[in-house]
Length: 462
Image 1 (cartoon, one colour):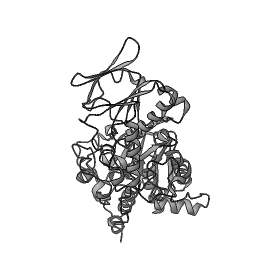
Image 2 (cartoon, helix red, strand yellow; image 1 turned 135 degrees about the vertical axis):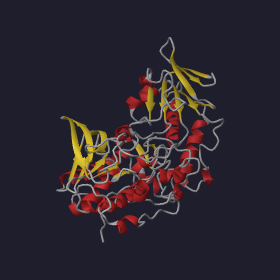
Image 3 (cartoon, helix red, strand yellow; image 1 turned 30 degrees about the vertical axis):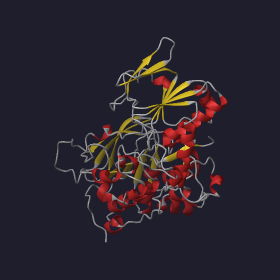
Image 4 (tube, one colour; image 1 turned 120 degrees about the horizontal axis):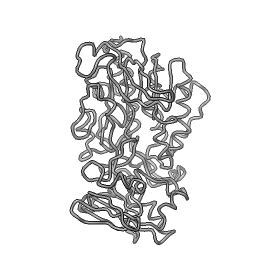
């Protein structure tokens, strides 16, 4: 029996912010339940953020990257060829073979609409600011959108924020803010994993002194790529900036890692970092970036130490959520992570591993603003590890609750592999390399930091 627990006007659609894998999954569940839905994507196409790391191969297999409701819709349409469940796609393949067809299908559906270049600039209650208590449970949301035609206001019965964290990378600066001079020298700084298999990109770093900041899986992929570049151009050298006093367990457990491919990735990164091209610079917390007379950079640590003659900087220190457009709705966030408060203890990077986050849904993700939910990577705040399967379970529960089906919303329908859903291609460049390898992989060690919508692997072809 369905129950009405949010009394907002039913004639308005559910608005989903973000046409990434979790946002589109939420839309698929909504149309399957007969609910009107509008997906608003700031980028030019579905999975636009993933397109910026399209060259990176994921640790998750196709079986873990396709939402069940989305699969049912795609299969029913009869125009989709399902990928091999056991293969491990790159971000680009994920977009091309799943996200784009799904978005097209949803946009063509009588109940669905997917809009691009539609940036949400504000969410509030229609006619009421943050201070007003009355009517918050019954009035529609007012979603302010900047699109190709200008600024408009869209009314919604509920808002599901699946906008992720990609647009707000953590800065190089050690204080949580950009280092002095970081903005001024942004042309020399890259956030995320550059595609070093692209000759044009590789030319930017070949023969240069490159500083790499970060120690997680994304940083390891960068180190492996730069070490390979140094083999082709001996003048390439790398300063690996670590805030900790030693490399420590940055490379994982190697052969003893319970997630085999995470161990293999760590072993490759360890070998790369041990080569002559890479210098470890420990206890380095960047305070300032300064230009030199020759046009190169000097990086200065808070203790006065310096790394000089730097040509390029690659920052892979993670991402954080953007709450600026939610300033007129009521939120309950963990004060450290910026995550949904109920999740914080399970996802904190100091004590989180792949298998210890319990499946969760609408209860944990609901905000004090009735009908507002944070889902996907955004629900994890600054915590670095997130799995697509977790996001799919989140939105299945949230949409069921919005439909009044609290029995379904409260069920646990996520079945994780014994290793914690972290199967993956790990150190492999191509899916066919997996044929002779036991299931394993790795995605979410506590050290991971990078631009994951799901935790990603290593650059393809490196």
